[in-house]
Image (cartoon, rainbow, N blue to C red; front, side, top):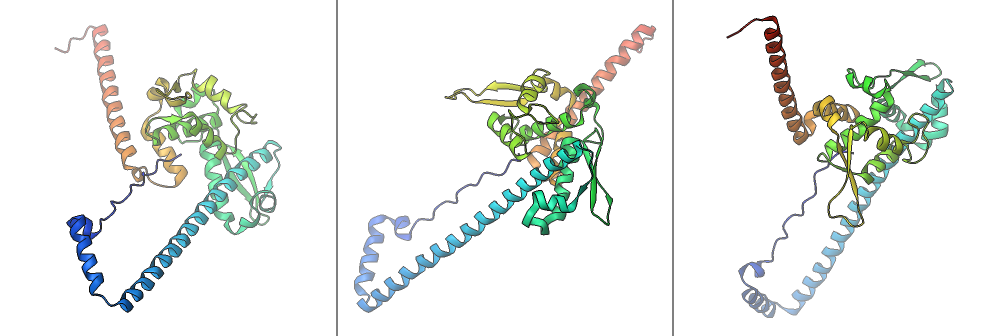
Length: 308
């Protein structure tokens, strides 16, 4: 979901001969090679041949380590998403959930990472689905879910979404994805985010019904999201952006704070989005001040009080 800095290639340094002029460099290299004894040239070739081999071997080792880290990270994220779904399903039956069940059916050989996995799952349950994971029996490591309804501390918008904490959490996830990707998110990126949360867009989910239908028929029609075709794309592609209702009811700072809580970071961790959110807060404060001044002026006029 988060925007990562694009990797930029470093400029490739030129050889000295190329910098000074192709023919001069070749002439110097040819002269030096003629003056050098054949044995020295042979030794140079052997040394030169060994060095690239070592370099290639080191590069392959680094690439293998980076690939292993990415795979481990993807597996950890997938396990967290699967545990969230497992906990939600167990909660439907209102039966306590034990650590041994979580390890047996979901976590498996990652049980050494149980504290990190359960902590991340609890964060997702709270901020996305509106549930709080509580351990009520420390001796037997037994947990229950408590429906908090409000995935954030202050949610005036929840009334507009029918008092549904999980639906609001999903909307905030989508708004966060859009905001962190430059205020636009391709349709495929939104469906990929649902997959990472353990949901299939067109498959029934016991909390959201059919997620794709919820997004397209509720969030879009209620103007929380805007949906349009991306210009000059063939085959046509579509993208989501914030709808007018989200712009009125939900501040960028609130959404950035939501994203920061999910990642256990401060909003300042994303300086571009943070500056934009500060500017949005200032605009909202000015608009609110103008509206309040206008209301006071109208009230004074109705009361027959002339201030000037």
